[in-house]
Length: 83
Image (cartoon, rainbow, N blue to C red; front, side, top):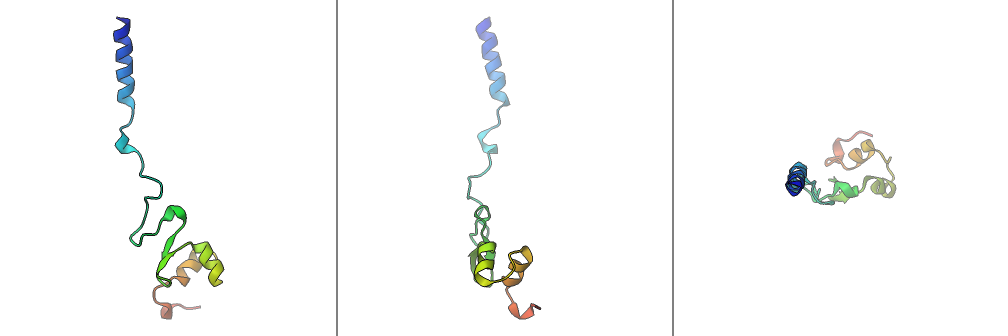
C-alpha cells in the first residue's frame, strides 16, 4: 500500500511539471528580418545597410548616443532630415 501511495505522489508531481515545449527559445535566436540580433545589442541601420550597435556607431560617427540620435543618423532618406 505504501508503494502505491509513493507511486501516486510521483505521478502527481510529474503531471505538474511544464512540458519542454513551453521553454523559451535558445539564447541568440532572436534575429530580426535583417539578421540583427537584439540580444547582442544590434539594430538595423539603413544608412550603413548593416547591423550596428547604437552606442558604438554613435562613438564612431560622432552623434549623440541616444534613441533619437541613432534613429536620425540611420534614417533611410537623409535629404528629408532637418538639423
